[in-house]
Amino acid sequence: MMGALYTLYEREMRKWFRQKVQLVFIVVMPLMWMGLFGKSLNFSALLRIPDIPGAEPLRNQIQLLIEEYVIKRYFGGYDYFSFFVIGMLSVFILFTTMWSGMSLVFDRRLGYLNRFLVAPIPRSSIVMSKILSSVTRSLIQVTALLIIALALGLSLKPGVGVIDIAILYGVITLLALSFSSIFTAIAVRITSHDLVISIANLVNLPLMFTSNAIFPVEQMPQYLQIIARANPITHANVITRYHLLGVGDPGSMVTSTIYMALFATTSIAIAIIASRRIE
Amino acid sequence: MWAVEVEDLHKIYPGGVKALNGVSFKVSKGEVYSLLGPNGAGKTTTMKIIATLLKPTSGRAMVMGIDVTSNPDSVRKIIGYVPQDLSADDELTGIENVVLQARLYGIPKDKAVKRARELLEMVGLGEAANRLVKSYSGGMRRRLELAMGLVNEPELLILDEPTLGLDVQSKLSLWEHIERLKKEKKVTILMTTHYMDEADKLSDRIAIIDRGKIVAEGSPQELKAKVGGDVIMIKISSDPLKVVEKLRMIDGVRGVDVIEGNIRIKVNVAETMLPEILKVLGSVDGRIESISITRPTLDQVFIEYTGRMFRDEEPGDFRRQMMIWRRKR
Ligand SMILES: Nc1ncnc2c1ncn2[C@@H]1O[C@H](COP(=O)(O)OP(=O)(O)O)[C@@H](O)[C@H]1O
Ligand SMILES: [Mg+2]
Picture 1: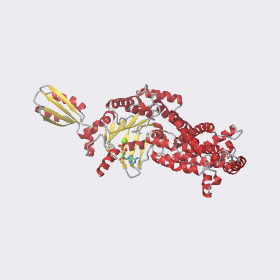
Picture 2: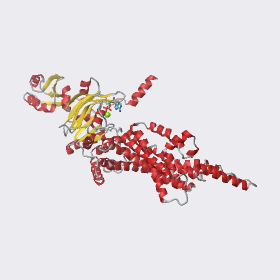
Picture 3: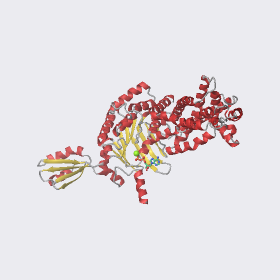
Picture 4: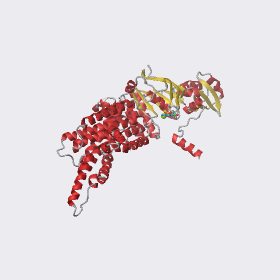
C-alpha cells in the first residue's frame, strides 16, 4: 500500500511541478481576492470618518466609538483586512481542493487510470494519492499566500510564534484533507469533466458565504448560523484567527479542533470506501 | 493447465448494450492467440474482463488457473496489459512512465530504473527514454506501451489492437518486436486485432469474433483450409489432361481442373502437397514451365463464417452520429 501510494503521489507532484503555469495560478486568483475585494470592501477603511475642520474632537470621539463598538465588535479587532485575509485562506484551500476530482477524471479519460487499475495495488492508494497531493499543494499555496498577504498589509497579532504558524498548517491540513477527500470521492465514477466543473461551481460560493470568512457568524440570521457552524471553513477560521490575529474566544478552540478532526476522518473514510467503486 | 480459459462470457453494459454473447476459448501456454474481428465485435470487452478491469455479466475467465473475478490481485501480478487506448502519461518521459509502472509492481527504485532501461532498449526507445511522451510518434508510443506491459515479466501478455492506427513501417517494426518476444521470452500472448494480415502473421491460433460470439477458431492455415485451401497453378509443356487423373488420386488433393492450359489444383496446404505433386508430374513426359501458389485470405474466412464482408474501418461513433444528424435535417 505505502509503496504504491508513494509512487502515485510522486507522479502527481512531479506533474504539478512540471506545469509551471499552475504555480502562478495558485496565487493569481487569491491575489485578486485579497488585493481587490479585501482592499475595497475593507470595513475599517469604509467606516473611517474624514477630517472635519473645526470638529476634530467630536470626529475623533465618534471614530473611536465606531472602532470600538462596530468594527471591533464584529471583527474582533480593528483591522478588517487582516480578518478577511486569514478567513479567506481557508476559502482559497476550498477553491484549490474542489478540483481534486478533476485529475481522476482526466486520468480516466486519457487511459492512465487503466494502467493503475490493472496493477496489483489497492484501489485506495489511487484515491489517497490524489488527496495527499492536493493537501501538499494546499500547504504550498498557503505559504505563498501568507507572504503575499503580509506584503499587502496583513498584520498578525503581536508576538505571533512558531507554534501559531504550526497550528495554521495543522488546520489547513485538516481542511484540505476534508475537502479533497470529498471531491475525489465524488469523482470516482464521473467520466465527464463538465460535471466536475458544475459541481465545483455549485458549491464554491455557497460554502464561502455560509462561513465566517467574510462576515462574522454572530451577525447572521439564525438559519444561516446553523449552516455556518456546520461548515468546516468556519471552524478553521475560528482557530486560525485566534492564533494569528488574537481574535475570538479561546474557549472555542477545543470544540472547533474536534469538529475538524472528525470531519476530516469521516471524509477520508468516505473516499476510501468510494475507491472500491473506482472503474 | 491453460494459460487462459474463458467460459461462456456474457457482458451487457449498463444501458443494455449486449457486447458479449457467450464467448469461450482456451489458450495454451506459450501460444500467440488472436481474437480477430471488426470494430464493435467485443474484443476489447473480452480483454478487459480477462485483465480484471471489467466484471462479466455471467460466465468466467481464468488466467493460469486463477479466476479473474474472485482473485483479481493474483491475476494482476502475472499479467501485462497493453490497452487499445494509449495509456502512457504524456507529461512524463518514456523512462518515467516505465519506472512508475515497475514501482506499482513493487519493484524497488534502483531495480526499476535498470529494468526500465533494458525494456526501452529492447523496444528501440533507448535514445528517446528521457524525452516527454508528448513528443513521441504513434509507433514509439505503441512500443512504449509494450515495454510498460512487460515490467513485471508477465506470464500472460494481453495486447489489445497493438498496431491500431500505425503506418506500415511502424506496424512491421512492432510485429518484429512481438515475434521476438514470443521467441525469446516464451510469454503467452493473447491479442486482438481487426487486421487480417496481422492475425495471420503473428498468431498460432485465431478466433474469429463477430457480434459478441466466436464464429470460428483454428490456426491460420486451418481456418483458411476450411474455406477452400490453397490453389496451385502449374503449367507444363505436355498435354495437361494426361496427368489430371493421376493428380486426382493423390491424398489431400481436393480438386483438379485445367484452365486455359494450366493445371489448377486445390489443396489444403500447398507446401506439404507440392513434393507429392511434383513426383507425379516427374513421372510423365514434359517439363514444368511455371508454378504459382495462391493462398486464401482470412478475409474469405470471415465472409464464409459471418456472411458479411470484413471492413477494416467501420465509421466511428462520432461519424455515425454526424451521419444520423445530417439525415435528420
Ligand atoms: N462502456 C461501454 N458502455 C456501453 N457500451 C459499450 C461500452 N464499451 C463498449 N461498448 C459496446 O460494446 C460492443 C463491443 O465493444 P468492444 O468490446 O469495444 O469491441 P471491439 O474492441 O471489438 O471493437 C460495442 O457495441 C460497443 O459499442
Ligand atoms: Mg477494441
